Length: 346
Ligand code: AHG
Ligand code: MN
Ligand code: MN
Image: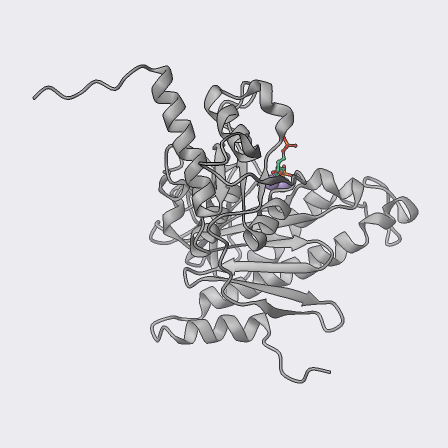
């Protein structure tokens, strides 16, 4: 039996100790999120029992109505954050508008954005789902937070992470000092350091994309995906395909083994499907901190200045060389389609 472990609490505090000016508030906020993750993990572990214990919309034994898991996850995160005095405003996939902290609580200095349950359609088939979060320092001076606090480019994030509720529950986060992963030990209810300083391979084994959209992609995306499958082995190493349909699970696998995940624009989703603020941006921060990269095809994801809370963005993310190959291919095909580039007059 191991007698020395590093809990997430200790690890976060020790990292913050390296910065004498730090107040400990960000550490506490990350710990608040870890608590929400444990509550959500516990509910997900019982999800398969819903048919036995009652379906969503039915009454549970306490006479309370059973909630759908994405609603439950959303409420859980808000309830774990709103009273702490560390947050001024939140933004969630499940809420149309920003969520300033209620007036009875103190407003803090951070804005938190989240996708409470990512890949939620996987719940019904007992596959991996996740939670994604992104933290910015507020821009407004005081009072409840405003839209300006949530509408910030990814490069100003002070922390980002995800929780994956898979065969075990893992929390992976960065504060800009590398990417670290923790595995929940359910017997003691603690996240323990299991993956210190994750670095993703420069070239990956896998490509992950919903290929049923192939006919709706533009020429550049089709050419890039053909390349990943092995059409141009001299330019890019042929890859194996893996796709779960849950960004957290697809991203996590590729982070560890190396790979590239794409959710490009298509004829039905001209801006892609994924959301910039609480899906693409936090994952891009993690990818870059693990020495990978993330682009919308033209721009670095972390440089995109958001215009609205639920804005979508095409996403190519993962191993640096593979993302580079996709971006180069998109650029090359687009240039070819628009004819030769005019040379500047001398
Ligand atoms: P969510 O469950 O939060 O709505 O997100 C689902 C997302 C993401 O997790 C995944 O990468 C993508 O939808 C899958 O979409 P397709 O089913 O179109 O492939
Ligand atoms: Mn999602
Ligand atoms: Mn979701």
